[in-house]
Length: 270
Image 1 (tube, rainbow, N blue to C red):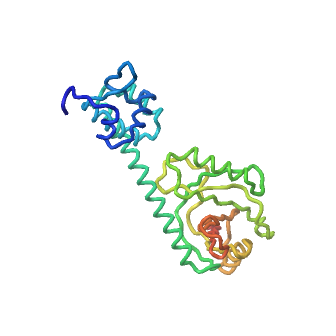
Image 2 (cartoon, rainbow, N blue to C red; image 1 turned 90 degrees about the horizontal axis):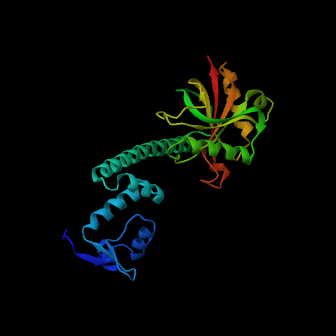
Image 3 (spheres, helix red, strand yellow; image 1 turned 120 degrees about the horizontal axis):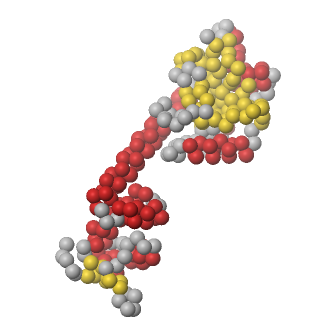
């Protein structure tokens, strides 16, 4: 860069291919000051500030929070090496978040493809690993309300560093209610965690043999649970005390109830 050469705010903005008003805003916020300001308030910038601006924009893009960027500049702004190391740390964090998002997308694709290919209302036994869950557990059996769903959403988003690609909220039904033909009472709402998640789980779906079925919501939910029970009776399986209902293809993805799918599960007592 040529030392000492100065440009007007308009020239500097044109050189960097940015809107001049962005320079005004960053000046007002104390994030990027001009090299000089005359008595009429006109600003000028040195060519040596080009790299300063580019470094600032890299930090802004990584932090996505101008208040945080201002704090960062107060801490590391005069130490370029420290700023580079800080940017490297932010990039590593975002790469980890992208890796987690990729896993979630892959799992969601797998769930969707499995649900679409599965024979509707056909129960089967599968062997599953334990699955950790974030859950809102109710002290007494209750029926789901919007307030409870909001409570679960708030819980999940407050615990996870990276919001999930699809926030699925499952329901835990007590077996005695299902046996009585009532799918309304639940004991918990839950959201599965990814296999490698470091987040502390609230509860765990036990691993081992599980009776599973993909149920389409154009027929009553109790019919799907009855299929599970009938399958278990036919094969002389004793089922656990909880039945799980997990949305796979939800109403926000399709308005057709015949295309909306939930996965129904019941643990097999060994």
